[in-house]
Image (tube, rainbow over the protein chains, first blue to last red):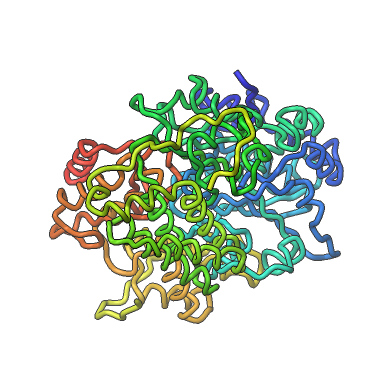
Length: 455
Length: 170
């Protein structure tokens, strides 16, 4: 069994209550941080841990914290991003449902480190049950003196509130989240200024993902150096992976970074293989926005070495043969799934969720959806594949926020690796409505020899 | 989108206004507009949708222009701008759920309830729609029912039938 830092006690009955959470060592990090460490020392520990943002971008958390401006007499804010909406990702929901105090403990330590006196947890609106769970847990913590005025007699005051969103994927982007928290439409802001300088209400603000904040607890308990010993290279610590799709055991798993992808998919400790005895055709390794890979490139790098679950190994080979860690939303497709249909589905998602501010995204996502709909339903022409490629190229990099890129990459990677399947839909308009393209050569093992780039 | 319909303006109860006051107290002085999204959720929980007259009163309560409420209510997909069934079923229709049969569940609901997506059944009890990812991909297909947002996972056509019967008999 690999080491568990966040989910160690997840199966303990009553771990969602303060009492049991305390019995299992909960809130030790708050005591240690508030009584024995200075805010600067906490930031230093988080830097040493090598923790990288768990929401998707993978930016070092300690570094992000150190950018926070600290002008005299101006309030600072910590906002937790619990707007988990990336298709394939459901780890934050899991953590908040079963072990809400882990997030609250992390929020207290992190708020103290950043000098925030009021902090918000922005939870996506659909997660009303989780909002109720968090509010109950906050009330428990407050009654026990872990929140409010003069926490543990240290003179530190903190109020923690839960803010519901309204069902908009875009609010997972940090500046859109801040707009939404200010009671406005979730339109991402132009950066700079970055939130560290001008965030919530124009004040210096740090926005961190739920899992990043929860990870601060073991970092403070055991020290940043200990945390950094787990994992591989610059991918330190453990990561929650949300596994979905055609797997024997979908669910949330905590892995040590560096675990081979093959082991993650097939070992009984994790996903237990592909459901119904079928074969793996493709995966999306980090949530819907990251490039889709065929089975062979999922398990092996282009040079035949095994691919690992780490930031570096998943992105090895760039977009030509690699993908990204993203938010850790691991989606598996079995041999009967249609890549064209799924790409169309994802395009519809991005079209639906585009905020409409930038024309390449607003117009491009809808256009891609229409072209993909046409191909999927047997009305496509060969030019359409090139048209799709052209549209996605013109969205990528040309928008205020990364939603444009996130819409472009799934389409680009599907064409890059599965062009045969798109062309088959066009050449066989009748057959493609009745049967699937199947596994084709997408799972053909990669030999450990110099391989030319896959087209 | 915001078609002003013939309607009797809704009345906010004193309990609802007390909840409004509590929410408003969460933000710094002068930043009460932040309460807008939570207030609209409270309105929807009370009336099962967000009528224009309620938006106008929310605007008045927060001392902001009505347009500031309308633009938010129309941007976020959770707010119902027309009446729904007493039980508004929302089925996730995004990629991972479709890999495990979400489209079949949506088709089944349409047949079972005898209404199209977005319509309300004659008895006023049910409406349904497909929504984008609900962040429960490992337990798909999933649906949620507002206003409580209770969650139902690993759906099959049989479990959906049972759910509908249970709700009818509630």
